[in-house]
Image 1 (cartoon, helix red, strand yellow):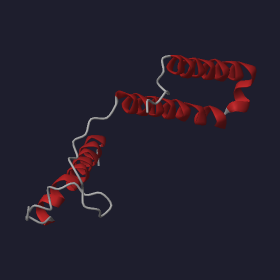
Image 2 (cartoon, helix red, strand yellow):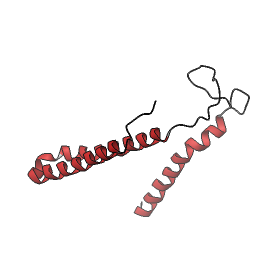
Image 3 (cartoon, one colour):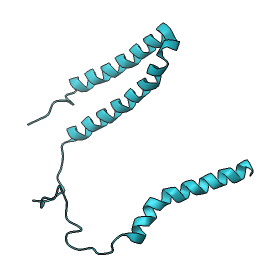
Amino acid sequence: MSSYAQLALLLGLGIALGAMPLVLPLLIGPRYKGKDTESTYECGVDPVGSSWLRFGIGFYVFALIFVAFEVDILYLFPIALVYEDFGWRGFVEIALFLSILSLAVVYAWRKGVFHWAK
């Protein structure tokens, strides 16, 4: 089997497996749409009021900062595995990386991102 045939096979398999979760519910899912289908469901409790509430921008900013720091922490795992190979140069680079992250936290703190209004 040539490498182009393998590539085409893997590409077709990837497209099929990617489309399956999108198409399969349309084929086997229930067709009934009633009043309960369009209501907001939360832990089995009947909803009170509208589900379209406005949240403060602080929630979104806090979530974005959390996601950014989680991605940055993922960069530290590969370095931790090969830390002994880098020596002092690796230590300085990691210290510089963490200091820049710390400056970002200090900046967000000074801007009042972590202050929640009551």
